[in-house]
Length: 227
Image 1 (tube, rainbow, N blue to C red):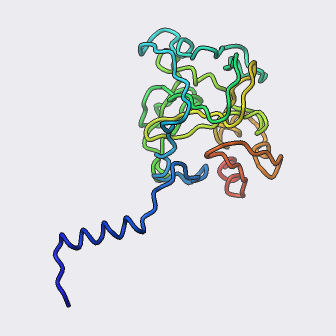
Image 2: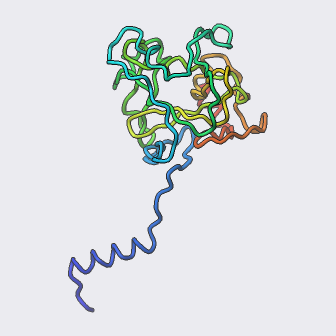
Image 3: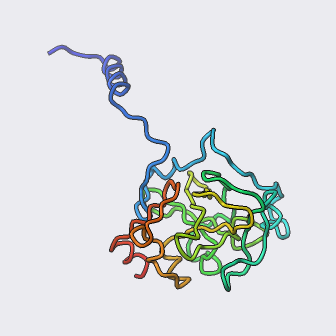
């Protein structure tokens, strides 16, 4: 048997990896309840269109409203009882990114405000390690005003985790005058008393240009949503 030095072994290992190791895709679907390290790759790329917020100092009065990008309007939502919502005055194509979602960083779920209505979970390997809570309009941005769509037909945005941040991304063309609407998760549907079937692909057959919004409903989805 021929002895091999550590340096030679390391060179052979690196050479083999160059030949056989596949580059991780920019976007990998991991499902609504199966977050992995791949979530950190749901980030806008160098060629993606990103709509930046209007820059406003932190803890500024009504900051969430003031950070709205040019062309986005805060007005009464088209959803009855939803309060305010965000509308666009220009056409937004599919694939446009917004964010990141801003709010206070919280590590203890018992410190979340307003029943976590404005909080996003940040996960790694299906473990929630922090929250971004936009409960306070002075310490958040305009994304807190985006409402939850009542069905898959209304939805025109999806949310994606990029490392320690949450971004919103358009999944279809949003016409001038339309309200921006997001799907916040099946648990949120239960809170708003929205029929979960409205988000199942087999229910209405709708398909948008989404990265992480398949909506293939399973028995497990129903169990998680209504447990």
